[in-house]
Length: 83
Image 1 (cartoon, rainbow, N blue to C red):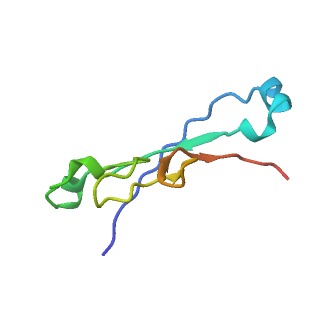
Image 2 (cartoon, rainbow, N blue to C red):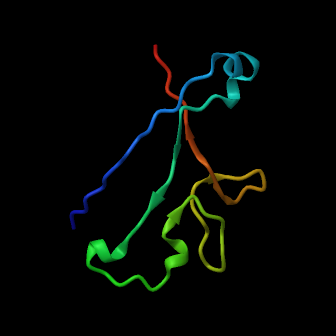
């Protein structure tokens, strides 16, 4: 089964002062995903799990990076490095 995935990246300014104070807090991208099952020709019976990141709920383990508590649902962050 083939599926089309479209990605959009918007670049935020890199703040050099913030990077010097705390290099670990420097991330260039925050990734989010939303699924529209009607675009795939399917009926969406659980709209509560269409977005990612999201916290766990019921039998849904959530999605995204791990939180401090060890569950899924935290932001997915990417830092671009030039070598």
